[in-house]
Amino acid sequence: MEIERAGQVLTAREIFDLVREDLEAVEKAIDIESIASVDTVTTIGRYLHQSGGKRLRPALLLLAARFAGGGGKTAIHLGAVVEMIHAATLVHDDVIDVARTRRGRPSANVQWGNHTCVLAGDWLYMQAFQVALRERNFHILDLLISLTQMMVEGELIQLDRLGKIEITEADCMELVDRKTACLFSACARLGAVAASATTAAEEKLGEFAWNLGMAFQLIDDTLDFTSREQTLGKPVGGDLKEGKVTLPLVYALERATPAERQLVETVLRDRNYDAASFEQILAFVEARGGLRRTRERAQHFRERAQQIVSEFPETPYQRALLTVTEMVTERDR
Image 1: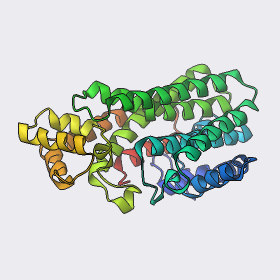
Image 2: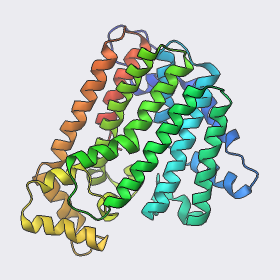
Image 3: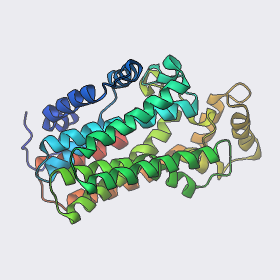
Image 4: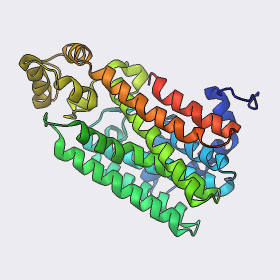
């Protein structure tokens, strides 16, 4: 594995090779920590764990820890914590969104019902905090509590806006911050804490990851229109059908004709594509520049993330973080 090639950007495989052993340890930790005294909770936890996912969040935490010169068992434990918190949010999101699939499989709420899944998600949250508490570090708990509050507030704000067409660019950015970017930022900061990095380094890594998270979610919002269900792991066009107006639509609506606006209002009202087809919506969003402008915004956040990392000395881990920014904005799922 040639990871010491000066000045060259690493491949995705090389990035994961840098933290492969730690990621495997995180997987084992999640499996162990997902065992509950109630069998149903254990079954749901393992179902979520085995459904795959890119493990981008724990990988980001581990890379940040290595980048900052440390890591070890604390980084592995915290990698398990952030993935368990992420899984808990997905369980709750699927209940709220009445989702049918997740990562190409039936969602947990379809398998076990809403009541059971809400409680299982609660258990996962508390178990994640239980693991974090073992580090006996108030700063870690402070980061995780602030993160959880931000994400819950984001979900409440999104619920309040469901079905509303008068959504602004600022509204979208607020939700992207609260539901995605803040988690990315916390992952990088927790990695820095695990490495006993300086406060300045922790804040810089947090800023880098926040911009990365903003770019990640904006690309996700475009993929909801342009990807395929087999690739995305959930139905395309799902956001609008659930009543969510994301940034590509906001941009497109700024230039919409009354007839085009009516198409969007129809889907928001009916929560399906029976009267206004997804193909019509996609053509409208593309024609009015919604996808292009959203990708440009994502590019802006990516460039800011790259700028921050470029200020640090070049190492394999610094180059890995640079490559992650490319992976986020050029992915197709």
